[in-house]
Image: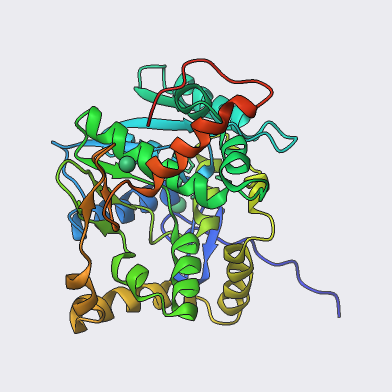
Amino acid sequence: MPKRPRRPLRCRHCDQKAVINMRQHKLALCGPHFVEWVHKQTERSIKKWRMFTRDERVLVAVSGGKDSLALWDILLELGYQADGLYIGLGIDGGVHYSDQSHEYIRQFIAQRGGDLTLHVVDVAEVYGASIPQAAQLSRRGRAKPCSLCGLTKRHIMNRIAREHGYHVLATGHNLDDEVAVLFGNTLQWAVGYLTRQGPLLPPSHPGLARKVKPLFRFYEREMAAYAIVRGIEYVYDECPFAEGATSIRHKELLNQLEAQSPGAKLHFYLNFLRAREEHGLFQTVQEQIELHTCPTCGQPTTNEGQCAFCRTWERVQERVGALPHTPQGANAP
Ligand code: AMP
Ligand code: FES
Ligand code: ZN
Ligand code: ZN
C-alpha cells in the first residue's frame, strides 16, 4: 500500500508550518512563536533565579558561537543593558578559528546597527603569547591548551567585569553543556564542583561579578534553531582542540539517552538543582571552602599565595623570548 505523505508539523499556536518540534515539551512551533517562546523562557529563568534586573549592567561573554550570540540577542530584545566581551585566544587550527569567531561578532553588531559596546581582549597582545603558544611554553611541549584556556578566560572575564563595573557576567552555556559537565562530575563524585555548578553563582569574593547562565534550560538544537530563525550567522566549528574531549563523549552518550527518553537531560539537571536546593545536598561542603586573595591580581584563589593564572602566565612570560614571534605590548598579569 502506498504510504500517505506525512502532514508537515504545525505550530501549536497558529497552525503555520513548524520550524522545530521539541519532543521533551511536546511542543512544535513556527518561527515567530518559537522566538517568542525562547524570550519568555529566558525571562522566566532570569526572574526565577534572580539573575539580574533591568537596572543592572550585564557583560555577555561572546565567543562567536550560536549560544553566546543568541544570548546577547535575547537580552537586548528583552530590554536588558547588555554589552559584549570577546577574548581573542589566537587559536588557528587551520580554519582561523579565532579570527572567524571575531568576524561573526562584528557581523552581529553591524546587523544591529553598530551601536553596541564590545570589549575585546586579545590574549597575545595583552599577555605576550597566544593560548596555544602559552600552553606549549608553560608545559614544555604537552600541547593541549584547554585547561590553560579555561583558566585564562575566567580570569579575563572577572577582570573586565570588575574594571568596567558590571554587576553580572553572563555566559552562553546551554543545557547540553551543563548536563555534560554534571554527568562528568557525578561520575567522579567531584563534590567541590557539584557544590558550585548551577545557573547562578553568587560572587565568591568582593569585587567579583555574579555569574549567570540564562540559557541553561535550552537544548543545543533549540539555540541553533533560534540563531537560524533570527538570521544570526555564527561559527559552526568546535574549537579544534576540543576533538576527543571527554565532555564531547559524554554529550554523545547523553544524546542516546535523550533519543530513548525525551526530556532525560532536562530532568537530570533540574532534579539535581532541586536536590541541592530543597534537600541540602552538598551543603556542608559549601561551608568548608575557604578562599584567599591573590597578591598579584586580587582575584580569589583556593591556595594561599599567587593564583594559578598569575603563576602560569609569569612562567610563560619568562619563557616568551623563546617564541619565534613575540607580540608587542606584553603586560604583567
Ligand atoms: P565554552 O567553554 O567554549 O563551551 O564556552 C562557554 C561560554 O563561554 C560561551 O557560551 C561564551 O559565553 C563564553 N566564551 C567562550 N569562549 C569565549 C571567548 N573566546 N570570548 C568570550 N567568551 C567566550
Ligand atoms: Fe580554549 Fe578550545 S582550547 S576554546
Ligand atoms: Zn505559530
Ligand atoms: Zn592572580
